[in-house]
Amino acid sequence: MVYVELLKEKESELTQYEIKELQEEVRRLAREKNAVILSHYYQRPEVQDIADFVGDSLELSRKAAQTNADIIVFCGVRFMCETAKIVNPTKKVLHPNPESGCPMADMITAKDVLRLKEEHPDGEVVAYVNTNADVKAVSDLCVTSANAVKIVQKLDSRKVIFIPDQALGNWVKKHVPDKEFIIWQGFCPPHFEFTAKEVQKLKELYPDAKLAVHPECHPRVIELADFVGSTSQIINYATTCDAKRVIVITEVGLKHTLMKKNPEKEYIFPESMNYCGSVYCCTMKGITLPKVYQTLKEEINEVKLPEDIIEKAKRPIIRMLEMST
Ligand code: 13P
Ligand code: SF4
Image (cartoon, rainbow, N blue to C red; front, side):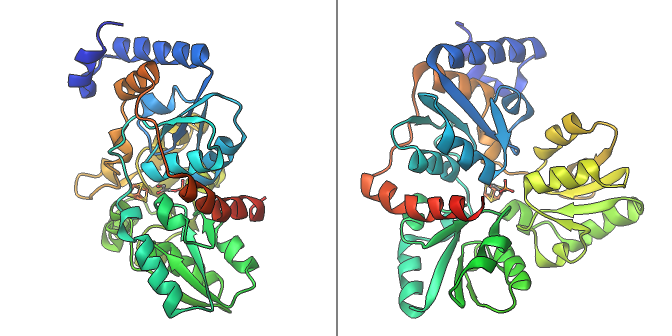
């Protein structure tokens, strides 16, 4: 494997043959080193295809907690790698691109959370898992888009401080009307900025299609949807519903799994429409096959967190895993 340095320079131009060769080499290394490769659905298709497991945020945190592998290569954004480290601190967790963070996670700091707690001492801080480790460390409970409504419904406290995603916060609030919500105004740029007007155009073009959207989308987009759910919930809905065509408003990486699971259907993602924008997460796509290869081969880009942060951040994550079984 002398070509990896070259591949790094032209990773977007790999031939099918080079991709296959590199994928085989990554799998060989994973076996040799007893490494498990985890991938989020928003990853590039060629990265998803080398993973031992592809899943949504909740499924991936469960897998990370359960694995017996010595090394976890996490193909996702930074908060996901941190979660894997927090639930399994003795393992070596490698992040193929340490620069791949989540812009929404960076929209709130631990200091902001402490101030919110001071202002609302009777509130419970519910943190979307898309938060940095130090923010989790000062939160009471984590949720993902797959379990947020169910978990918040189970809480005893009447006041919920929901951070950092306003879209998911409003979605949960709608389903839990008996609680008071303080909602932080963070958002996921790719999902939140996709407009209802663009969705209407797609609906007019495909009047027979069902519309499935992620709860990180703008409330006006959510209003138009036939189904709202996390990535794995969308997969389940889109591949099994009656409609032959489904318009899907979430990150385009999901199309790969949909096509694999049920190629009989047509999945319409906005990126294919030249008059629409797209829902494309640049940081998720910052993980490339050559980066995965180099990271595993050289065992670089290890995720490191201070011990006290691991200890404190573990509580809200474990509480979530227990409450969502
Ligand atoms: P889920 O996989 O939980 O649906 O989350 C989507 C997301 O934006 C992760 O960053
Ligand atoms: Fe963050 Fe949105 Fe990208 Fe998910 S899709 S990692 S929430 S920016």
